[in-house]
Image (tube, rainbow, N blue to C red; front, side, top):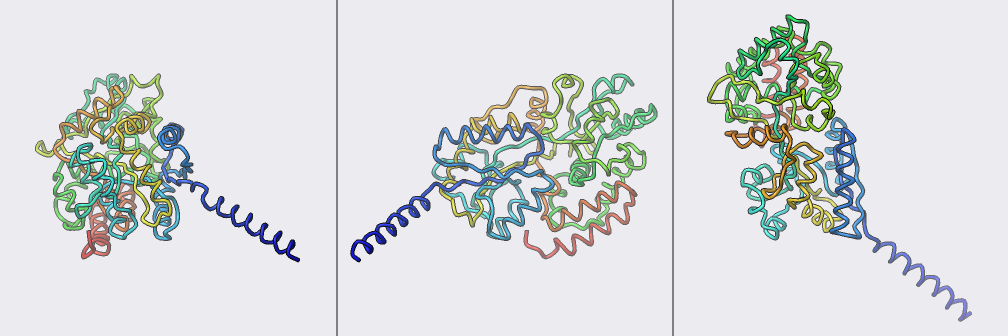
Length: 416
């Protein structure tokens, strides 16, 4: 009987030890990322390799989704308080709405420990700050503007347009010669936010633009109506690619590359998708000037990573955020991302698109994040659908009334 008790006790002890060993096994660090192409997948393979060199023994599990699937999924993760430990996201209002809801971990301890104020500019940290605290690591900033097909313009003796009048004239000349001037895919209507942003920035300036997207100005304001009058000039001229509502942004790009369109408004991430044999045919220029004093405001989105406040693996998550803050890591990341490292010690790949982008950003008077990053999701998602309708009917009166209704229901009297 004693021997049986001893054997039973031994089995129980062994089982307890095994369970303890299993429970102390390193937790995987789960990281949610966006990848829309093979280049971005290579980026995360490289991140895993170099992170494990610095922090061996911390396994990483990447959860990668396309951008169109990622946006609704991140809300589901945060609202359920389960999901990845570290998440890719966007600076500005899109981050702040999660911060205010308590979904994002405060990083002030890392800011102090690693002296981020010395590593990053005040303007950069401002995109991830709320009430004097830091909630994310800035990882990539990139410019938006017009990419154009140089040989196609040269074929019709068109110079790259510097102002709106020249831009419309160039579109008219191209259309007259059987070319659909502007490549765009609006099936995913977020891309239309860039057209709203740039016409508004060039016409009405940064302060007006940001106040408008926060809900402080009515969309029936005459200055907004004027914005849509400029935009309608392009829609009514049939200068946008026909059938664009059936294409996403990337499926529209071959029209530019194959000389079927001359212009596209896109972020510098497009430059990493241009085939090597066609790089010499594509050039970059700023969005055309409308009001001279507003010509130096730019869309320059900031991509960031943050820790989910309900993460069960915050120690490893903090190590990963610390890793991402390093200048060399940011330099390597942006080789794939087509952006620029926010860390002041970072460097940028020397190609014509990056050089043009750096010049643009260095000479800018101020930055907008992007239409759906400068306003709350409840408003911007529905507002982009209204912009998609405008691209079909160019009805200014209906468009501003719908946007104003959304402002009243989604922005007025809401905290921001």
